[in-house]
Image (tube, rainbow, N blue to C red; front, side, top):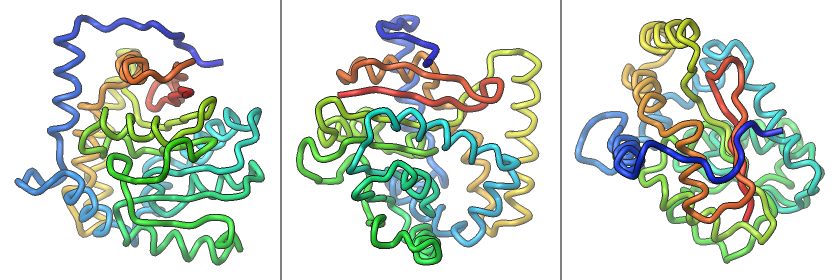
Length: 262
């Protein structure tokens, strides 16, 4: 069961707007270039180490999180699935267990998808799963295309959060499900202190050791802190007309699964 029902409240429209503005303004390289282009460059730079670093930094926990997301979709037996910000394809591969007829993964990083396609060939899933360049805000699939849409650790990187979520709503079939996995911010003071230390010092250090891009894992910390998580994110889904919305905290609040339907 998801832990937060519909009709959530935030502390006024001003706080709500400020959180969205803060999220949209956080970029990897702090240049004048569009956020999408900066994010694509960042992931191209770290593509060859991404899976290794992901496993090291999360200690493999992210695999269990994705499984929980896919379990939320199982009851409706989705046949056509979109994986947004697919990266190297891990979420799409997990969704293959639902026995769909087609999975499309989109990402703005060709470097990440290059490694993803190699995985698909090795797993013999290349006929089921197709990876294409694209992002949530501008992807032009027809209305009411997908039975389910998943996003794993990607909504933080949307250039315009509401625009991206609105476009996903458009291409979701009536009754279709949106499931999002994203880092969150713990509420317990002790967990929060440890989380802040890990993300502020350990994560950038490990990223610097294993990756040539020293900004990538500092940006991770900044984007998590700026992201309108938990009730705030559910409120955005409600505003955009998603139904049956809610979230479930994972691993003491360091991540969350968000859910909505069209």
